[in-house]
Image (cartoon, rainbow, N blue to C red; front, side, top):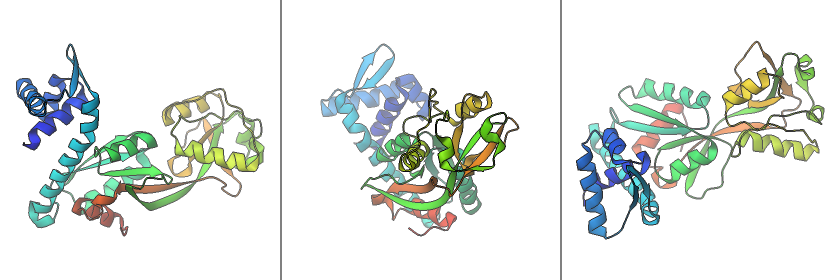
Length: 287
């Protein structure tokens, strides 16, 4: 059985329709349909539920997806190994990250050493990036904080304190640095579930016995910035990711009780991969 069928299967699973999958693979829709049908007929398993033009994974399809993605990742590894005597002068490196700051920095360093390589970046929260790693949808994950996963290797890249930022007319904006206790009763805008920055800040607040108020939860850094700019509360962010704006003021927390640590993640079974090693080498990191 060729990997073309698995490639078609993964594309349909991600795109949700035969037409979209065909476009992503640069194939005709009948070709993709025939590959899916052949896969189902040979295995005698229904992999998709059809609802008009839309296709969703069956329970069997959901179980097959990570296996198929792993198969395609291993095929890519073989191509990288054999191509250009392992020099990686062409190909694609797929990255996942919780934010653009560090990952763009990494991409710039990698491109300087491997100008022929293509790179793609998928931005999501920590849970999404970990899921993408587990399903072989990405090669490298860039995450804030350590996540307990026996199948993944984590290497420290950088550490930064978490800071506050408030509207320029907010009472806290008169200070450039405040003790954590000063946040008692302050309206603190919360980040979305899955945010490592929020979880780290919550831990620091609990340890200090500080209770903040919260009437707003936002789902992105952009939403957080706009909420703070409109005076809806105080925001938190890693110092490395703070973007200056005339509408608000950054505020350090005394003693830096909450910090973010940026880690590079990859599957343990791929730690000898030429692709992974080339990325780490470009950043000066030992595996």
